[in-house]
Image: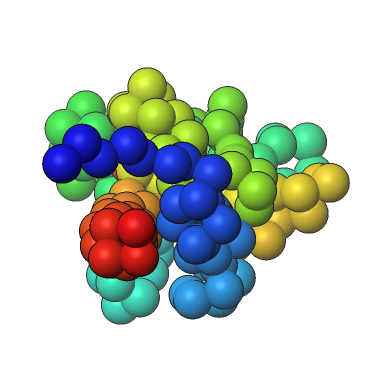
Length: 159
Ligand code: AMP
């Protein structure tokens, strides 16, 4: 039997997942620090909250950014124990790539792969709506794959 995959039919069955679906599940809680927060304080926050990054916001002229555990490791390797006293503004990435709630899971996977990072703030019309991590994306992709298999099974049975 030849199977022809009807993409439109699959989409009607709700196969594709979007960033907004992730936010609906996990909520829009965003952990932020100020540019003056020390590396030691950030490490404590990442550890107690079990997260991999924080957004840096609230500075007057210093702009916003993101600090991930990888930035802390880099600072430690460059400065040793003195890294603990550095501030977020010294170690953050300033050019933050963001995504839109309407972006597909595939789109954010590509952005993360291209940019070699595991966190994407979700922004619409300048408003910060949440953060998606690679863990959230992998979980959503697994759900998407499961839905896809179920939709295909239903389609085969119905035809
Ligand atoms: P990660 O893989 O998220 O731990 O981050 C790896 C590196 O990319 C670190 O230097 C982060 O500061 C940076 N980074 C993380 N997320 C982003 C993002 N959305 N846009 C730009 N840089 C980022």
